[in-house]
Length: 229
Image (cartoon, rainbow, N blue to C red; front, side, top):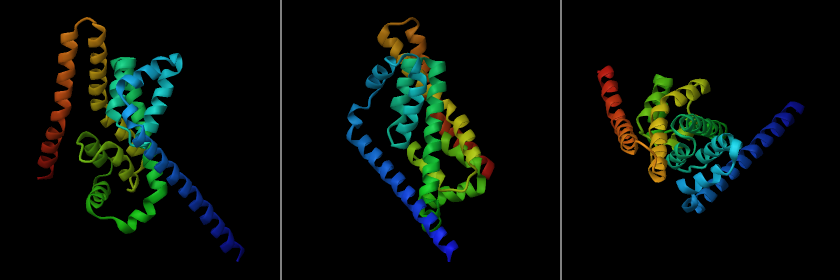
């Protein structure tokens, strides 16, 4: 009898925590939608340029929170390139995005993984079957080929049984090409506004990187189809 009561208390506490997390998540997404028009590259650049030595850490933390609340990562990545330059900007952008993807993954797994096992269907079933069959390789594929929006994918992958370490490492590595391309474009845009040197070369390199990122999914799809045949 005592064991039953104890188990019931634990279940109630777990349900309360889940409810609080869910309310926080929904509230954060609602606020992000309301203030979305103020979320732009210029405003982000102004905020973080005033933070001095604390800017990198706070920037990565803000990127992580923005990812959890479905704010567009491309805007933050461009701002990161403009604020920190191509190399440090890529590192901070990639780390912040991966932290956010990891938070979303664990929130999703904690809140809804049990429920999803009973309700899986449609595209989510395709996602879960793919992870079951291919593991980290499927995560790599979906990070390189945007079959799903980035923010939604983070939550969707949390509903699967993939190893968290495999998810985090694969996410970090496979987001690197896109992170570098968009960071460079943000950096090139800053240099263009400031009238820096070698603007033509920097702009052409940015366009080349963007073209490569746009072509990469098609190339990967061809390789995937060839290996499957």
